[in-house]
Structures are given as structure tokens and as C-alpha cells.
Amino acid sequence: MVVASRMLFRFSIVWFVAVVSCFSQDSSQTYEVYVSKNLIGTLIEAKIISKDVNSSKKILYHAFKEIERIDSLLAWQIPTSEISKINSYAGKSPVKISYETYSILERSLTYSESSNGIFDVTIGPLTQLWGFNGDEEPTTVPDKKAIDSCLKLVGYKDLILNSNDTSAFLRRAGMSIDLGGIGKGYAIDRASDVLKRNGLTSFLFNAGGDVLVSGYKAEDQNWTVGIKDPRKEDKLLGSVELTDKSIATSGDYERYFEVDGKRYHHIIDPFTGYPASNSVSVSVIAESAERADALATTVFITQGITGWQGTSDEEFLIVTNDLKNIFSPGFKKKYHFKSIK
Amino acid sequence: MKRRDFLRNGLLIAGAVSIPGLAKPFLSKNLVTGTSLTIITDDVDKAASLGQTFFSKMNIKSRLKYEDYDLIGDHIGDLVFVKNGVLFDFKNSDKSDALLLKEIATKLHLPTNFRNPKLVKFIAVGDAENSDKTIKIFSNNSLVKEIKLKKELVSFSVEGVKGTSEFQISQNGIKAISAPCGHKTCLKLGTASIVGDSLVCIPNKLRAVVYGNGGGFPDAISF
Image: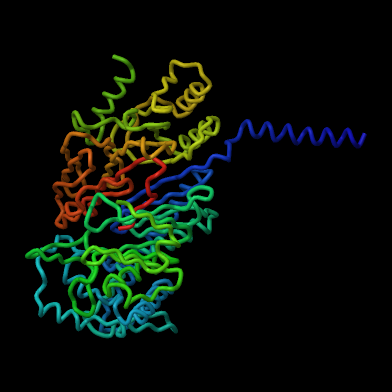
């Protein structure tokens, strides 16, 4: 009797599973869900590996919202952002800010300290003078006197942070913060957190060339990221294979103008006030997109090696002015760099 | 006139920025090789769910990509299934695949005219060598054009929020040749030809992205 009951029970289970299988979706098929949007002044692309398209899209919607929220806090171009408030009170009084904005400014100062001021978020007066972030295309080199005046307003040591009340103060009137060097990277780091908190583990974000990857594209298959050739628009220098890493590239070939055959681009050296001219492109692989972003800018300005402050997991590729590739020791091997001719 | 030709012509007329001789309707099988399911619908969630159910019953060995895009203007909602590069005439077939597709069409009330619908695509990732590159052009995050790269040089214009931008397409890729904004950054980007590469005009809220469904392309490009 007991045996018969057990058999009946087992048969019921098998029958139930069979019926459910017939009526439910086959969960073994995975999908690469792709969504792209123009947000925060750049193109943001996301790819998620998932068995459920609709739930992935819903989670991704919140990740994109997070990116917009961060932009509303950090963009100096948005008059209501906390960074705009700090800038407008420069030389007047400290501004109480959210812990999040405080934290990113605190990390910015750490990047400044470790790069001896090469990375400096108080570069705002110079970036605005050169006008690469403005509405019109810059076509002329600013006057030397104007550059010298702006240079006097750049200096991370005059960004005063107070942890007691999470306030920020720019000591001199006219100073301004521009988080363009890490903003995009930070935004996709936070978007990545949203996906992870909701159980997604394999995905990729690309925010205007800053790429963050998590997990794998497929079983035992890393994500592949191409690195653009800075002088051949239709070519890649090569590709790397990544998992749980970010890569950012700083280059002189996207936002620039030329005068008398000389190229002037958007990455400004905070010591000279002019576009950095030691390299044409620098790509950095790091643990987070924010760090990759900050290190790519730093290495670009210093031509790398002397300004390199990366950890052992962080690697770089520099394309020098004479178009030679300089790799940090682990770049090729760790990330399976494949050259593309 | 065959119904599908009628559908294609209708889409050409209804397309937001259709250009005679250049534009292809979003449901054109010419835009895809390999295997794909394309649906124009007003119920994107249901279409995604039904598409997943459909593919769960198919014996697709390769990875599947899913994408959806907003479309601007009036479009005829319908679905197109291309299997191994061949358009599957499901409406005149009694095969099990055809029955499933008919069921999807019924549940999504297709064909129907829709205003500002969504384009839903499931695409099997194929071999890079055999994959055609297409260019998708977006205005203000809505898909306004999808074009296969062409041997001959063709110019066309697309309306953005600030005015008209002009593009030129060739076998090599796509490049911007005029832009109404002050910055003109997109003009300096040259030709976008690598899969994953894009031309972006932030002020005019336009972007052109190079797509390919082959498995050998990079997943993203750092620049």
C-alpha cells in the first residue's frame, strides 16, 4: 500500500513537471538583450545575458534611470546639479551636498594626489575657455592671457571638503569643478550595481567608449572589446577579452580642431592650460569604469609610465605621437590582446 | 499586387523619413541574413514574451539577440520570420512553426495600423564572415531608418531636433556630411564602418550605429 502510494506520488510529480514544461517557456535559451539610448550627452549601450527578456528590460530601465539621476547630481551643465551649486558659490561659502557627491569628490582628490595634480577636477575654467563642451564648435586657440588667468583658478588643493557636514567649497571665486574625466565611468559603475542588486550577473555597458563588463557573454566566453585606432577611423588597433573589468580610452581624435596643421583637442593639461600633446590615445583596463576613466586621462596627459598610478590588475596601452604602441607589462597576456591589421 | 509587396510599399510610404530608392521597410527580409523574427507591434512586452515562447520551441543552436526600438509615425504592424536567410511564408503554411507564428499574429492583433509602435527583433547570432552589416539611424532614441551597406555611394538626410543632418552611405560605412549644430563633431568622426561603431550628434539627437549579427565582432568599442 505504502509502495503504491509512493509510486503514485512519484508519477504525479513526473506528470506535473511534464505538464508545466509543455506550457512554460524553455528556460534553457539565453538571450542577449540590447538597449541603447542617448543619455547624459552620450550614447549609452547595454547588453544583458538573460533567460527572461522582459524582466531584464525592466531592471535595465532602472539602471538607465540611475544614470540620469547621477547626471542630475554631477553635470556642471545642469544648473540645478550639486556641482553647479558648488561652482556658483565658489569663493563665497561651502555648499552642503549629498554623501554621494561628497564621496565622488573625495575620490577625485585621491586621484589628484596620486597623480600629483595631473588629474584635477577643478579644471572647469580651462575646459569652459576652450569650449569643447559648449554649443558651438571651437575653432580658435584661446588667448594666452586668458589661459594664464584660468590656470590660476585651477588647483585641487583649493577644493575643500568637510566630512562633518558633507560640504564642498571652492576657495576662490571663478573656480569650477568639471567631473567630465570620471562622470561617465561613475555613472555606468552605478548602473552596473543596479543590475547586480537585481540578480543580473552577465552584462556590458558602453557609455561613449567607456566600457564596463560583468560576467561572461556565454559559457566560458569573455566579452570582447575592440580598441579604436586613433588615426584610422575604420580600423581597430586590436581587441581584448574581459570579464568583471572596465576599459576607458582617452584620445585626441574625437573632439578637436586644427589651426595651421596643429591639432587642439579636449584633454587639457592642468599645468600648461593647453591640450596635452604627449600621446594620441591611451586605453586603461581597471576594476571600475571610474578608475579606468581617471587613469586614462592621467596617463594620456603624462604619456603614461611616469604618471602611472594603477594597481597590479590595471593595465594600459598608449599610442604615442609617432603612432607606436606601448603596452604595460600585463596588458597583452592578461587580457588576450589580439592585434587587428 | 501581392499582400507582402503591398505591405512593403505601405511601409515605404509610411516610414518616418523614407527616401525613394534607398529606404527599406523595417520588415524587409533584405535587412537580415540567417534567422530572425521581426515584429512591429504596440505591445512590446507581449511580443517579447511570445517571441521567447516561439524560439523555445524552435531548435536554434546559436545565441539569440533581442532588441526593440521605438518607431515614429504610422506603421503597419505585422511579423516576418526569416529562417536561414529564407522568408518563411507562415500564412500559407500548416507547419508547426507557421501555426505558432499565426498564434503570435492573432494574439498581437496583426496586421493592424499602429501609430508610433515598437519594432521587436529576435536575431540568431551567426557567422561573422557571412553576416551583412546594416546601419541603424536613430532620431531622439527612435529608429527612423535601417539600411544595408551599399556598393554605390548614396546620400540622404534625416531630421533631428535641431534640423537636417546629411549622411552618406557606401560599401565602407556611413559618414556624416552636414550637421545643423554648432559643434560638427560627427563630421570629424569620419566613416563608421566597424560593427559597434557609431556616429553620434548629441545636439541634433541623431545617431547612426553599425550593426552586424556575426559572432566574431567585438561586443563594444572603446574610443
